Length: 155
Image 1 (cartoon, helix red, strand yellow):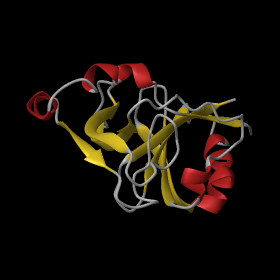
Image 2 (cartoon, rainbow, N blue to C red):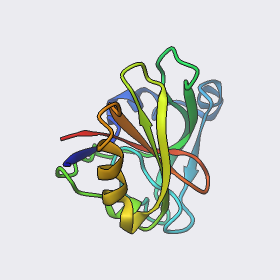
Image 3 (cartoon, one colour):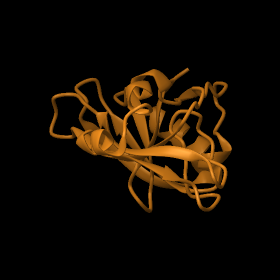
């Protein structure tokens, strides 16, 4: 089964980039500088930030639907990042080098399936999850820190 991984839209964060530190704090965000690589995965570009690159660390509500599974977590967004559009069936390098949680949601936005996959096995795990016809979409999370990595739909 083919799938599509989605980077987040830069536009939903663009209003934050011009804010000062105090204003960012009111949005549960702060400016950081990447001091190692890997370690600062951008959720827009689906690439690692380079050492010295500026990012925002912010709380992002990745499951905003009115469900018991409503959820948010910290993510990084690179200043000026362009939204990633991986090809159908493509797993970005940033995910292939991490242990990933794969969470399957149904049309009511309830989590009905979950598994952990080594990044090199992520494509197979995603395809396996979509074999369940009740799974409408997936969320990928970095398994160690639990932060949202990307959404996945059928392609």
